[in-house]
Image 1 (cartoon, rainbow, N blue to C red):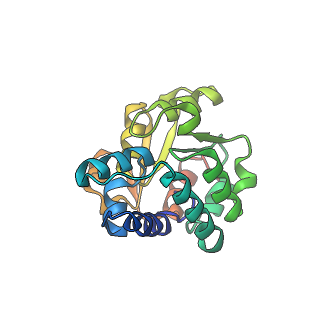
Image 2 (cartoon, rainbow, N blue to C red):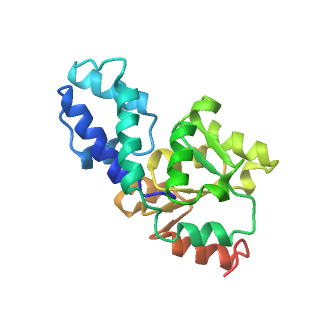
Image 3 (cartoon, rainbow, N blue to C red):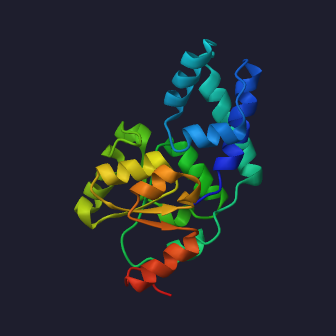
Amino acid sequence: MLVDSEGLGNDVFAETLAIYGHQISSNESKSRFRGMKLATCLEVLELETGIALPESFETDLRARMSSVFQDQLRPVEGALRLVESLQIPFCVASSGPRKKIEENLQTTNLYPHFVGKIFSGYEVKSWKPDPGLFLSAAKHFGIAPRDCIVVEDSYVGVSAGIAADMTVLALNAAVDSQSVAAASKVFASLDEIHDFFVSENLSRD
């Protein structure tokens, strides 16, 4: 949601899978697996194709992604403005490993705003759509789930927020009818979310 990694990440994912005989386009990967735990994605593909992947696949894939992200990753438009304007406690809660989250935030110059505010599904042992990751973050800040707002751009993320009994704002969810139907509100951009927060006195203009 903060960094524009989906397109780049799925390009690398599709290219790396092709080396081992899995044929899937970047767009299909993005549509089917957005926001999901990587191991779950790989299990689904192996079951569908019968093609086993080597134990080193995840390590190799993450190394490839890290290299591409360092060169090409950019923040989502409006991300820095939104983060700098917030007047409430905030964090990033991602299904990805902490190393990846930190590298992405550092590459896009967002990391200083999230020191001590990063929650990884690999550390909590909970991956979206399970609500455990969000509930862990809420507990850390001492805030009741019903008083939390989740900003998400995937169906599994929206589902996790709803399961956690949190208000869910869906970003760019028009491409995902499930997210549109499930989210509390739908926005086309982070700038729109910023304006909404300003109207609710949660962010400064």
